[in-house]
Structure formats: C-alpha cells, structure tokens
Image (cartoon, rainbow over all chains, first blue to last red):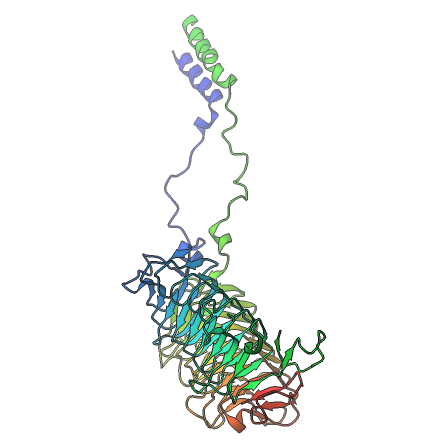
Length: 285
Length: 288
C-alpha cells in the first residue's frame, strides 16, 4: 500500500509540477502607493454637466465657483434658457473643441455677468442661439479661438475684454459688438454677419473708447450695414484702428466718428498693386 | 503487487490523454504589450498638491525638482506664505486654467527663487495677493510667462533674473506695476495692461523697465493711474539699449511713455496730429 501511495504521489508530481510550488502570500503588501494618479489628477478640471454645474431657471448650466471647467460633449440648448452662465470670478472655460448648439427659442449661448472679473472662454463653437452667442458684462475677460455663428449677435462685450483669433460669421446682428472701453479686438475673421441687414449693425461695431481694433478681416456685413463701425454714442473716442481688411460694404466698409486713431485706407479703386507702404493702413475692397 | 501495478497503470495511462491534448502553456508569453496607456502615461506631469509638492513654513507648495507640473484645483493662499515657490531648474508650471488666489496678508502668488534658471509659468489666473508683493515674483534666469491673467496684486509680474519672455498676458488692476522688469534681456510682447497703478503712485506704470537690452513690442496699455506712466524705462545708469516698438498706450497723456536716453524707440504717433495716420514708420508707438 505504501508503494501505491508513493506511485500516486509521484504520478501527480510528474503530471502537475505546479502543484508542488508555493503561491506566496495572498495578503497585499500594503496600501497602494503614490505612484498612481487618481482620475481627478489625470483630469482635474471640472466638467460642465448636470452634476457638476447644474442649471437654474435661467441657464442650462451655471458656473458659480471659481475654477477651471471644460466641456465633455456638445451641449444642445433648451428653449427659454442660456446655455452656460458664469456668475463668479476667476473662471476658465475650455469648450474643448465641442459645440454649444442653440435651438429655437433659446437665450444666450454663454452669459458672463457683471460681477465677474478674470474669465477666459476659449477653444470651441457657439452656434445658432436665439440670443447672442456670447453676452458679457464682466471685466478682464479673454475670448480666444472661438467659432461663433448663426446667433443674434455673435459676441457682445460690455466690459474690458480681449477678443482674439475668433471666427465670427453668419450672425443675424453684429458679429463683434464692443460696448466697453479698453478692449483689444485682434486677429478675428468676421464674415456674413448682419444677415438681418440692419443699418446700425455690421461686422465689428465699437461703441466704447480706448479700444484697439487690429488686424481683423471682415467681409460681407449686410448690404445696409458696416464692416467696421466706430460710433461715439457712448463717448467712444481714442480708438485705434490699424491693419484691418474689410470687403463687401462699399462706402460703408468703415465708419469712424471723430477723434479716433486710424490707419489710412488702401482701396482697390487705385490700383491692383499696393503702392501705399504705410504699415498701419486699413484695406477696403 | 499486481493490484498496485494495475492502479499505477490506470493512473498513468488514464491521465495521459490530458497531457496528450495539452491546451498550451498557462504561463503568459510576456507582460502585456504597449497597446494600453497607464494613467501616468496619460498624465505624466506632476500635480501640485500637498503630497507631491509639500510646502514649508513660508510657502504653501514648493517645487524642488526639475519637471513638468500642473494645478489640479485652485490654489487659495494662506497668510504669511507664498502660494507656490519654484526652487529648481527646468520647471514648467501649467496653471491648467485654475487660479492662484491670495489673501491680503500672504506674500507672492508664485515665487521663483534666485540661483535657478529655465522656468515656464503659463495658462491661468493669479489674483488678489499682498498689496506689497507680486502675483509672480521671479529672481531666476530664463523665465517665460505666457497666457496669464494677473490682477489685483501689488505688481502683477515682477522679474529680476537675466533673460525672459512675458507674452500674451493680461495684467490688469494691479496696485502698482502691471509688468515690472529689473533683469536684462527680456522680450515683453502682446500683453494687455488695463487699469494698473490703482494707488496712483507717481512712478507707477503699467510696464516698468529698469534694465537693459529688452524688447518691448506690441503691448496694449490703458489707464495707468493719472500720475503714473504707461510704459516707463527708468532713468538710471546702465538702462540702455531697450527696443520699444509698436506699442499702443492710452490714458496718461504726456506720461504715456517715458524713455531715458540710449534706447531704441519707434516714433510716437498721437491722435493730436490727425485722425488718419500719416506716419508710415512700421516701428511707431501709439499714444492717445
């Protein structure tokens, strides 16, 4: 019988050698160390959604705490509401390449209230809102690398702002409406705005003072409208307008009230070859 | 004995078919391949927090090793401390859209210590630090400050080291200087400075240079306190060879610019001449 036991043991040992090896302790050596990152460290910013930025009766989403926010998907508007309201200081909103898509009966795509300072909105699209694409009454705001189309006004700023490298097109009213002092409007492409053909609207309308309107390209701003218009209705003087190109509104490509600082006009009526070497010139054609 | 042999034979030959039809080795051929990314590969940078960048008695967070760092939340300062101190070479700090916000009795928002070089700070907001200190105070060499909003501090960005870039920043509503450069060899370009020198210091300025060999180009300045200056190059020995071109300054009339001798300066175009610019010098500065 001993022989039998030995034979059975050896047989299993030959066929299943792993049975003879120790498996080690199943007890973990300790808690996970700091070599790993929490998901909140991989993406620490706050997503704009119903959980993190719940809306209210006025807006689909409300940002009421300072921080860095980003979209995780396109947002489709809700009738009677703004898309995103920003109601506090020190906010960065990265649209993350996504779109705020308005529908019939919506309000503003993004509204930033006057109590806010230090806000950045960048990197995405804001289309087809029944109100303005962006309506801001805040100060120290930067709008950068946005596409804004098919809204009432495209981008309306009533506080000191930087509007830089945006594409603003096909809005019913004004493409970029600057109703504040000390704004910088730089390097924007505005086309086909003022589709409502209002005589007071246009591609870029400035009502404030001490603004810089530099190196923008504006085309087709409604037959009755303006390409770039500087109006003094709010005391708008000392605005600097250089290096812009405007097309499609004939004699209304530009309108400047008095006391502005304006580069000379170069028009295609003179010659196809530019002979004016003034580096501050504005073009109309 | 015959029984034993029989049983052994049954065991051996009865189990053999299992071995004869092996399913392949259960030992993995190797570790999982590189088709997946670890979390540390997705975000290889180091978060600024109490675990990874613990502070000391004078700073809330302290960076002491070269690397790429980023914020995962707002930094809210505490009294008698800096917000973030960089004491290492070769550091990139991405504020990641977050804010570094100070209480009134704190020190600087971000301090970059002397003796180090090659730091980048970018992409965020710095606001509300001590009325005697700065949003960013740097003593290091070769620094880059890019796409920052700096407001409501004593000096927005204050830099003493040799070599740097201050680019596409908004320095607004600071108590004294918006951008204050004491080191040499800087490029200060594309910044937007509005409403600085809120305490109306006679020598306060939106952009204040007290050094040599810097390039101040394409900045936009409005309203630097009625008694202050828009862009000011301090008149002390050695502050020479700064290039100031294509800037636009408003709101300080005769004090829009102050340049001591031995600078390289574009001509001034003012709106007192005419509404239409006739000066065709491409390096002109605007005053209006």
